[in-house]
Image 1 (cartoon, rainbow over the protein chains, first blue to last red):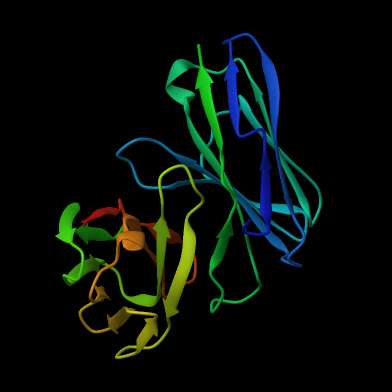
Image 2 (tube, one colour):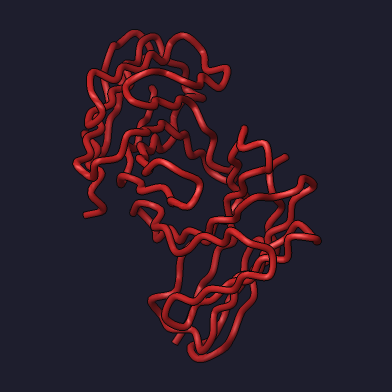
Length: 113
Length: 110
């Protein structure tokens, strides 16, 4: 366990479904992130939250909708996804300051059919 | 802006050494190194903040050449447990963007 917990670990959804990914951390970090990891591609930053406020949206399509109700929880709401959205979605948290590294969750393996 | 890692993949025998390089076209403030085993979360190994800095984590160490805008990760006397994909991540001086490299897949065989 890394201290960042993601559920579910695996998700298969149809293109018309609505589902949500959940991330939880109790490390006392105030910054939380969503990353997308596709085969043979670098980790792609999707969203950044600092102290519950969204500070970055990396041109992510609106079919992905993040929510951060508090500093410990982060959600990614999914609707009308496309097959090319199939990937590993990683949540991460980080302490304040440039000297801290990211703590990642184990990810949700998403398959869109 | 994304750092370039080399090599993309390397196969080693147990006990052999390896070097993974990470270079950027931008001036860097810091470099991170992570390792991800198959089906697991990427794990933070170390961060280098100053040019010329070197750090170690067990038999894994790294250096940061600020002027050359690059970092190298050194794996000494590799063990089977070192297998995985190694990522560097770079933060540029304006602190605006952090990018991960594409990863280097390391396979250590008995």
